[in-house]
Image 1 (tube, rainbow, N blue to C red):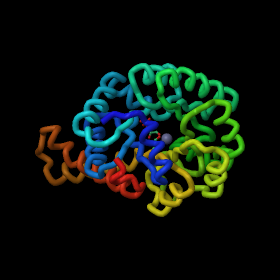
Image 2: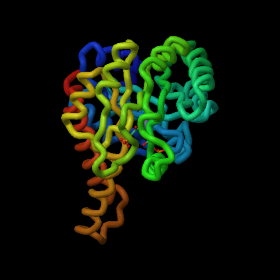
Image 3: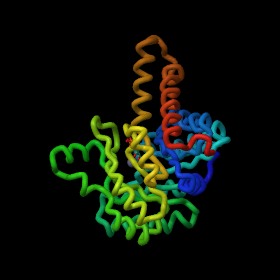
Length: 289
Ligand code: G3H
Ligand code: 13P
Ligand code: ZN
């Protein structure tokens, strides 16, 4: 059942577990996430990136998420969130259509602009009791990895400065903070890094819920330590994409003559559901609905 994100995250922070925030862009991924939450009796955040919104249009993906949440997912709390909104116009459209939370990601801009855009979003969103996530420091992806490899940038400079985080939270009035503490978007072999002392320092200086992006590929131990050190929300996308692809390739190899898209996609939906369930168990949010 759709509920305000505040209800889900506040309870997680008090209970010292993390809620999974899983990316969707279509019907199958949305079903997998919500079925997993129901099976685990867990609260869950279902989120779309800007490109997921562009893929099917905002009203379509919003209705898919809302409908599944209020039908299949009626026994568990579910909140809809915009992930990495770089374009204020898209952020505003998500506020208007009924998302429970939006990520105003101006982390690539200079500090003053990041503060200004985050604050402006808070002013608009809070009138509708919608939560705002903002980001300080940069959580890299594929392109960032290339720059790291060539030495164009270095990881330390990309990470969240704890003292600046305290100032940022005070100046903007945001509700959750996306932090850069060493994780990267995507799967990169050999990279399994969370700067725990930095995370702990941020935790000691700001009291709002912290969001760990780039969760895919981290080990159970790393997740558990990050939660112990103060993370309340963990974003996962790539793990689901990999599960989808592997199951699709396997099933097409076994039954290459099937033409019904529902039958072709069912093993992938099941595989993504299993992956979400696994993450929920690791995050400690099973039976916390
Ligand atoms: O953090 C980014 C998410 O994994 C979304 O990626 O823009 O390909 O939908 P996307
Ligand atoms: P991963 O794809 O590494 O899981 O990151 C997801 C994410 O941070 C979405 O914002
Ligand atoms: Zn992210």
